[in-house]
Image (cartoon, rainbow, N blue to C red; front, side, top):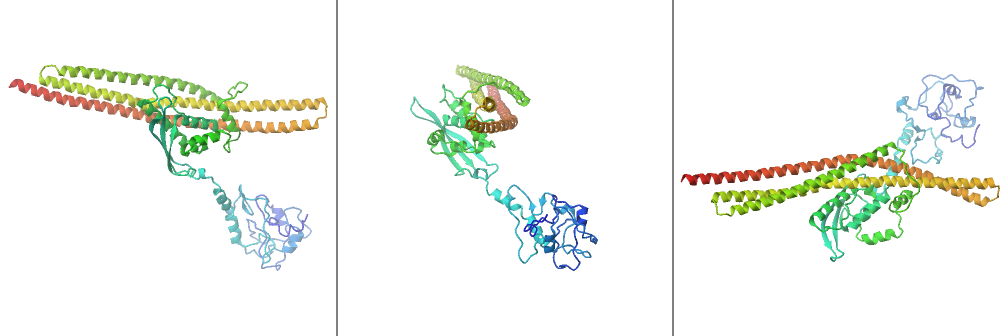
Length: 547
């Protein structure tokens, strides 16, 4: 069948491609023009395999019926056929490896290539078929047509994703107490250095208190169900202004922010950006709580917001063996970490008791050196008392070092286990929300079936219930996908947790051992100095007896 107006300019009429292969019979069935017909024009067949011999003309009665062949009208108009006794002058490659199997006659088709755009019409000075062009132009258009959409896609990258792995350096310091004695609190200086273009400046600092860090943790947990959010230290009412407690909390808060900005998902959260750079933080938080909803959160945000409240009917039964085994291992890890934390507390307490005992021993030696005895003996007792004082200070410093290194790491991972349980709970919330939607969908379907069986004519009611059922079914499918996504994210987070756990404990144990070795070296130096003092005094005493 011939389509007037289309066969005249159809670029695919004679062009063989991967989607339009030509068999041998089809090639043999094509009509061949006379040797002298339009000898100066180019061939309209862009075949990857050039004919290597002369072709015998077929009988005019054998007309091909394939829809891929051009009509008689287009053949008459274009008259572009390979002559019987001569080969075309086109420089066409005959190697299959030079062909792009994924590309059509107009080049490769990617995500942004328009498919509804018609091919350009040929100019008046050229041959009617757009494929009849020089090989250089054809090769250039095929090769250079695909990079254009890639450049256009690169220009649409958001500012916060301009750097694939933005670098953050967070420091929490300068803790100081403000307010009256009854309602005072500690404020920390949070300094940030980053190369992310999502922030207004590369270096900035703000002042934040403990409840601001708590708000950040709750926001991240709500915005990203399934993600393991680095935890903050627990709140303490007694002794919260002590130097040791303030320093321990400062280190924990700094560690929390450092891990948060290192997380590939959490580092791009808008609430984190608000926390780090907002100079009017309290006002911005109040405006956000009045009804501002972050973009691109969808159902996941509403589900995450239900972590702090709401009730769900039904009971969650774990069906995935992976998560079931991880829960058992997580419970065991939590018990072992808590036992190790208690053991570290006992070791620290014993070191402090030993430091106190060394101090009492030094006081006794100092008092003994003041008694009217031999001068050299008094000097030896006094030097021994000084050694015990130094050992006492070393034990106290060693005990604090144990708390700040291994002790804090153990306490941090006890809290991280709690964050992992929150991530598990968020997955359960998504599942229960999905099941509630499924139950609602079944009820609506039963109601529609009941109306159909009743035989009553309620067209408007049926239309409304049908539309609501379609919307509920769409929401069920979306919730199911969200549940699967949360599960995939949680698996990735657990794998990330396994790696970070090994790295953190390895670094903590190394610091613990280094501090223990340095402490023992310092003890040895003190005893060596005392031995030198003792030998000098003994020699002095022997010289005096000889005289």
